[in-house]
Image 1 (cartoon, rainbow, N blue to C red):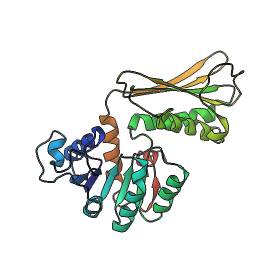
Image 2: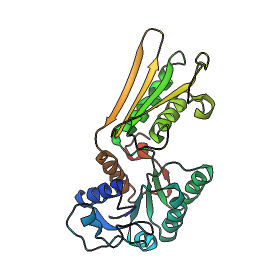
Image 3: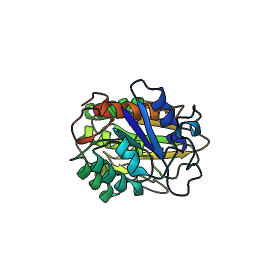
Length: 266
């Protein structure tokens, strides 16, 4: 399977290049970066700390999609529309780890998935996706006498809050209770906020140091508390999961999938 990486020069992109190269049955199809990136023209593999592969990092995303069976995209929401169009034009599957899409962006992804295979996830860690599945199951078992709070911590450079993974856990909890997260989400508590509303799903975000990612889901009852925590110690777990998803797309029908599909929870 030929796998291309857009945004291959960044920290995550380099890990994806390394993972493709290390995975049996996978072949690196190339890598791209945006205009003006200082890595343009460098060898894709050598830039990731590997032996040179003879392919240069380029701006030509169309050529990359044409050469790939599947492209992995962990870039920016603004680039997604172009990548969707290129994937549709070339019949290329897409693994989409980009987060932060607005409603129009999400609608465009759903429309494109009618023609191509897309795996989209807020987090490609296998462990976190197990946490998603169990959170939904527990939320369905424990009624709203158990207050749900989600705590996440990331490195000091992270600019969004709460994290996409925390939101995903909130959505899983809400789905387990048969409600919409938009109707029960409690964010940004500060000052005199009044008593906690029954059924709310609360979020708290911590930032500091170089924490890769920690997520805890708390079910707090009157006399007991259930906590489920996932801690990431390396970003390599995300690249490993993404390449597993890329391999999973082989032979799959067009559609919009997530990591729970890849892991067999659905």
